[in-house]
Length: 462
Image 1 (cartoon, one colour):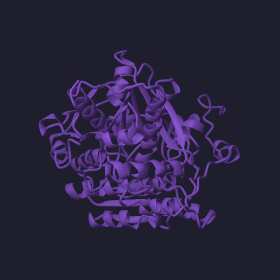
Image 2 (tube, helix red, strand yellow; image 1 turned 45 degrees about the vertical axis):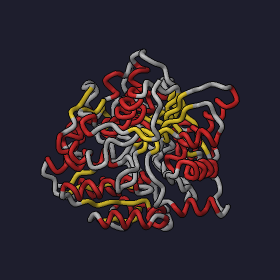
Image 3 (cartoon, helix red, strand yellow; image 1 turned 120 degrees about the vertical axis):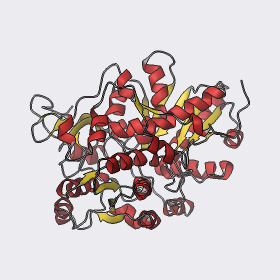
């Protein structure tokens, strides 16, 4: 076995030329989306008013295993890719563990996260179709920042609806979006019917990704030449993000390594789906059997405490319904939740794989997340994004288990990006003012009671 460098970079020529479509190898596919207008499975053309046509096709394509990455997209990828596979030698030493810890670092770009991988693709297809502009939502701001960067590159106007509590907590994210030319609006807002309705019910509503999605979709479908793009959850996004796992696996192959455990944070599923893609393929095809662990916040526990049911992807209930693990589209995470990963549901692909037993899920409290983030920063010299730090928390826990058992397991986790725009959360942790919020069963039941009834498809929620 070869000695691993601290950072292993593939060459430009080794950037994958194709994305991997995980659905092509799934034993059972996710349930089809439901068109709320017809209450029947959505067709590709049903998505055309919302998404540009190529992205609508990618969303519905369950059969094509590998999809060519356009050369224009690969050219922009070369600005910051390949991203490094890193060996956490100093973290291993600090923990005194016999485990080998690797992480795939996606923070070497201005957006500071993995989100740019899909943002470039979506902006490219929108520009190629001749659209006048696009709309989107963002929570903590990583996706909005990434899409702003990509749209600027391709000369495409962008309207961003940013969850209000994040808009207020993370002003630097907002400012970077504006540097790249995006128009940024705190959500809920008075600029849309969906936003006004929510503000009428609660003028102090802190916002949620579901609400921001409703506003962005409303503007997209009512503005000539505009379409909507989304940074997580969707099948097309997991397709684009597969570049993370494909690069990670190619780098580990060079080291003659294979992970026993693959760990990733989970909000809507973009980084999780991207990192695990080739390893889940091995698992589906019977080539290997790594443990795959999704880590989510205890304050927004869609996988660990949600219902596997059809639900709207937005609070305004104007998007197609997807079968996924969900807390209900009207669920609003606590305002004190500082770590991103705020979406009420989970990618239908990942929900199906979790439901069928191909991966595990763990929820963690944010004080424990920031404890892990602080240790990682001290020994590895990277200030990690709070989202990524959920994965760091569980990677540390697994490495400490190896310390107890003496097992030399190989652990791989995803470091989605940097936390330099998340200092309010870090400051709360350092000053001891950070608290943990875990919703009660009664809190969650409010959202479950409002899940849609679809005659003949979802007559009751179990």
